[in-house]
Image (cartoon, rainbow, N blue to C red):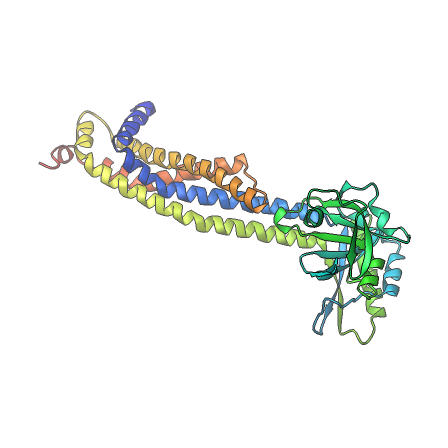
Amino acid sequence: MRIIDALRIAANALKIHKLRTFLTMIGVIVGITSIMIIIALGQGSVLFLQKQFSNAGTNTIELQFISKDNFKETYFPFDDSQISAIRKLPEVKNMITENIAETVNLNGIKRSDFTITGINKDYFAVKNVNTLEGENLNKIFEHSYIKTILLNKEASKRLFGEKSPLNKKINLNGKEFLIAGVFETKNTAYALKKPEVILSIKDWNNIFRSSGAQRITIQSADSNSLRIAGEKSLHLLQQTKPSSKKGDYQILNIAEVQKSITNMTTVLTYIMAGIASISLFVGGVGIMNIMLVSVIERTREIGIRKALGANRFDIILQFLIESVIVTFLGSLIGIVIGIIGTNIIALLAGWTSLISAINIISIMLFSIVIGVIFGIIPAMKAANMQPLEAFNYGE
């Protein structure tokens, strides 16, 4: 029997029971859709994380202090002398010092929906920041009678709506500041963006009555210099740590953290895809069940075809093709629904989705394999029928 004849017979057999064929596909459609969405969003999240870490700059490490006492937000583990000593290390290209507060008295109202960040000049040399309004973001570091600040896009909209906030004034903890610019941090998901006010770390310490820094990020010219800078900084910090500070300084390598999180996300994506494929297995069982019913219904047809000269291979091929057509059409529908569903979820949640041709081809090939595996038993049962018994079935 020619393949084209087998395809025509299989297609006609499926057309006779259109509703049953569609209901049989549902398990495959659900399975393929689930796998498609999970893999697309999972790989998209890996891409998103890579972009997020790119905001931290290349060849950077973060210095941390792990306290053995109860940690408080007002705790500043890096004092001015330590910061000055680290900055003088020859391997240090840029060094960011940051202080962050989540609660502030803004225009006379206590707010906890804004992040108030104090930074030094190296911040813009390392971080991935876009200027939306204002000519010079470094204006906040200029010494003048009127202190200046920057707003991110979310803070600008929260305080001024669609109007430009440039040269307008706001009050932070009783101190008046002039808005010098609006910025946007690149590659940040919408769901993770929060209204943020940036000012110089000197002004930050002034309005919050503190000194030192909560966080230090070091950047070097290359990975080898970064390793040396990290080791020297850590040694310096441990040597100058006051006895009253209970804890240890540690190095957080941004690249290593990115690699670990990426690997973990990839593994979890494929684990979830494996769990979702269970529904595809259930769909395959449904296909096998319907194909067995079809074999019984067409017993006389099988007997006639065998009597007219059809061999075992012809019968097996016919029923395998029917099974593969069902899974293949189900996978096509599932892929289309998966692409639409992935894009909708990504749009609503502000995530990134990554749909590749390799994934689509792999899923389609997998569906064909499912059709062959679950179609082989019904096909073998049909092929093993004796022509005379099959012909006289039901009499």
